[in-house]
Length: 160
Image (cartoon, rainbow, N blue to C red; front, side):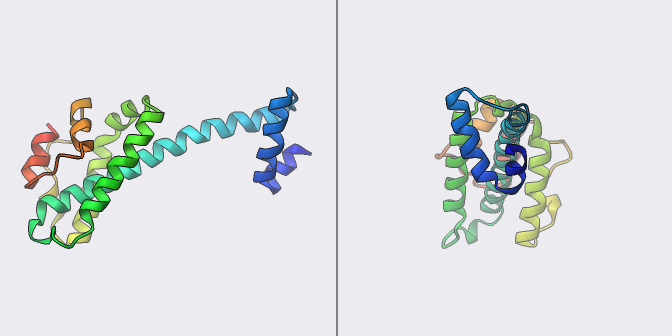
């Protein structure tokens, strides 16, 4: 019954399984679904931190590439929000930092493509031939509420 409830009413299943866990009673099917859900929760957090870093980098790129458009833009608010949310995720799941560092070349490339698309500037303006390789201190700087690149070279120097 619980297995079909899992498929037909996920919320109700979560409530029933939560109560079953508290009372120490679980079926085999429920344990398998619980294991799946726990693994998926980690994947969702990982995807969210990747997505938020892409948005953060894209807005930092736009900030650096178009200083004349900073005034009146929402870039600063978006940069602040992404830094805050990434910080919360990494505080709750510090091991995601390693995954984020490992994935930065792809994240940086996607951010450059998005920044190019939104600004109409060539993607080559946002990239360099050497791939982005991040370290912990570089991630810290990207997440620092006090740091903004004044020009694109500031991002490129950071990424080496």
